[in-house]
Length: 409
Image (cartoon, rainbow, N blue to C red; front, side, top):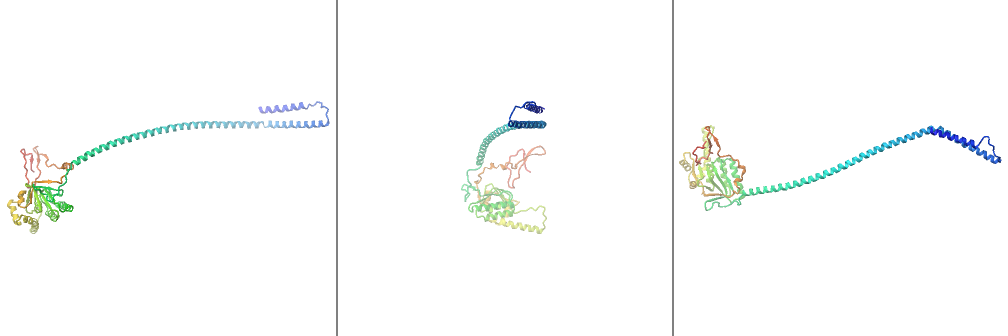
């Protein structure tokens, strides 16, 4: 409405100007025809301008509404644009704030992570330092333990080497046994023959001049086949075989002792010879079988007894006669000194030096839990007693036992 009013006022002013410029009743001054013509042209132009302006005003007046609408729309568009810009600015500001907060938080977290990492590295370094110190301490202690153990182990060994003599019997009657020794104890069976013969072969392969010792502590004899294998290995040996009897050698073990080229015994060692005997438990033999069994035993006896009798300087029959002259059972036993007179053994020794024992026997902890020889029991009357272990047939107990604590089975 304001724009419309302005347009009306402009049209009225133009009309007023036109009225002032050309009054109807005004008297024209005298002029020439040329001046009058120019004046007429000027009036026409002025009128035309006025008319144009009027038309323009009319057009302006006619389009005021559209221009007002356009202006309004422009204003609304600008308003919307500004609002959008404002919202965008707010969002951007909020985003910037969030980004700033995030960056701050990230920076704080990064710093915290760096601090944690540094702390962890320090703790790790401290731990490694402690572990290194502990490892050094453990290594020191372990070294001390190993040193102590090594010293203790070293103390279990004697500072000496086995004595190897081609003539092991000294002038003072002491026999010196080297590491080339083979123990022969307990029942002689096939495994015993394997044990002895394989070691005879080994020591021969090491040296064929130094003596090999078969040492008998307590051997009741055993299989004639196994014993014969041992005898043949002794005969085939290039190295001299020396048999030593410390306590008891009977039957097959006595044959091995007597038939050895060199043999030794303590004065109180017992050597026992007798005929071959057999026990046939639950066996049922007819007369022919019994005869065959006897003949087989007789052939074995000739192979074993004949060489023994020959060394003694008697016949086999005389040897048997002497057996039963000494004992109704035919078990002829003699102590070492008497056995030497009978040529059952070559030498009687006053002592034996085991030069190969360089390890302390008490260091063998694996045998700490050995079976006890004597174990306490309680009889039906409530009395405590112990059974005595079984002795070999030629051994006896020399024991003070007034209260009967020790008993025989």
